[in-house]
Image 1 (cartoon, rainbow, N blue to C red):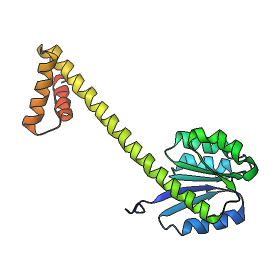
Image 2 (image 1 turned 180 degrees about the vertical axis):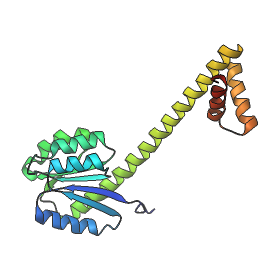
Image 3 (image 1 turned 135 degrees about the vertical axis):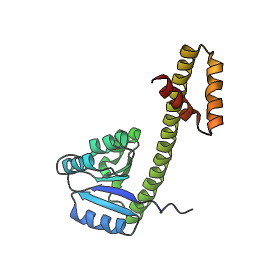
Image 4 (image 1 turned 180 degrees about the horizontal axis):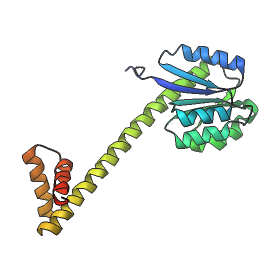
Length: 195
């Protein structure tokens, strides 16, 4: 199965030119990536107010901050996958800090192959987040439909003296007769009674 039909927007936050060069080379080999490069946490935060990204890669430390708070914030608030690269001597303590927030962590220096594999993990994570988001939207749509149908039932009960079952059946029959959804039938009834 080919998942690479989707474009991934990647934000790289790194102030180390040599690392940036090798990372951009690695990302360029993945033609389905488009990326932005920022060299400080403050510049990254500014960009994140304007755009969204599927993945964020943070090469810690940065000139203005260590990048840990940015990683945790973005992983918690956004629907994106975050990879934090930290010096090997700090790896375990930082991993313990960020792991509960779903931030992926790699020690530096890491071989190119390991960073490439980390991008594979980030892609998998992005697809999973996308699937969860779709289910959440679907659930929210269903809840909205239930609220609208219940509102129409209450109007039928109060205006026409129907029982709850009778009101429910009226909405179902209206939907079937007109070949529309129950939500659309309920919206028509609400509009009719609110005139």
